[in-house]
Image (cartoon, rainbow, N blue to C red; front, top):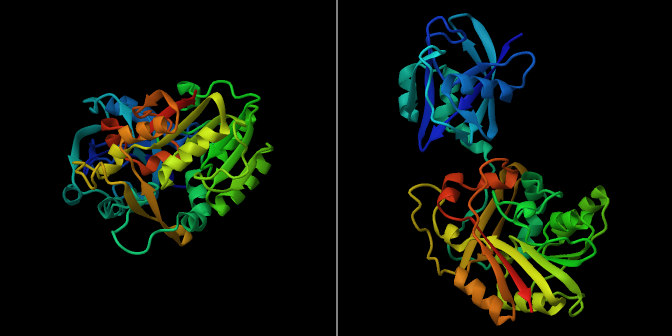
Length: 396
C-alpha cells in the first residue's frame, strides 16, 4: 500500500518554495520537492505537515487549504506515494532550514525555473500548469461596460443555489465581511433577546437564524425569491422561527412604523441603487433610540485590482460597477450591478435620513480561521487596505 505524504505549497508572488532533500534522507533522497512530511499512522495529513515544518523550516503553520492529491513515484526506491498538497495561506516565523535536518538547499523558483531542478514530473506538470490556483473559490469579476442593465433580482435567483453551496455562511455567528471580527468581538448589537429585528438584504437567511437563536423576533427581507426559499428551508432545518419575505430594501412593505428595535444589513446595501430610500425606510420602521448596523464592501478596496501592484481599476468616485459571477461547476452565471459610495457619502446619507452615527469601523483582517467566503479575497491586499466598511447608526 502506498505511503502518504503531505506537501506544503508556500508561494510568494509568482514563485514557489522548493527544497532539496539530502542524500540518504528518504523519500525522494537527493531530489527537489515541496517541503514534504511522511504521515504517521496516528496523525492527520495536516498534523504531519505542521510537525515537519516546525522542525525543518522553523515556522508555525496557520491556515492550510487542501489543493490537490497526486501520485508520485520515487525512482530511487521504486516506491509510489499518495501525496496530498496543502496551500499555506499564513504562517508565523521566518522560513529557514536546519543544517542538521532533511534538506541541504531551499529556493524560491518561478514556473520556468522549476523545470531546471529535476522535480518529479507529475508535480512539475501540476505546478507549471498553475492548477493549485483553481482550488480557491472565486468571486465576481468586473464586467465590460455596455449592454443591458443587469436585473439583480433575476441574477441572484440564477446563482442562489451555487452561491450558498460554495460560501456556506454561518448560522452561529454574524459575518460582517471577509476576514472580519465577528459580533462576539465587535459587540455592536448588544443583547438581542426579546428584540424585534429586521434584516435588510438577508440573502439565505443565515443572519436571521443567528439572531433567532439568541432570542430575537426576526423579519428578513431579500430581493431574491430563491434566496428566500433557501432561507426558509434552512430555518426549518435549524429549527428556528423567522419570517422571511421577498421584497426591496427601498420599500419595506408589511413592516409597520416604529415597530422594530434593531435593523441590520450585512454586505447587501451595495446592491441597492436608491440608498436614500433604503435609509429612510430603516428610519421609518425603527423605534427611537434603536440601532441600524450595516456593512458594505469598502469603496477603496473595490477601486484597486486584486493582485499586486494594486493599480486603480476604477475611480473611487465611480458609483456603478457591473460584475460577472460564474459558477462553471454548476453551469450558472449572472451579471449583477453594485453601487459604491465614498465613505463620506455613506455618512452624509445617514445623517440626512435622521440617523446619528455612533461607530464607523474599517477592521484589519483576522489572520486565522478563514471561512469559504474569505477565500475569494486577497489576504495580502486586505493587510494593506480595509475590505469592509461597518457602520452603527442610531435613530434619536
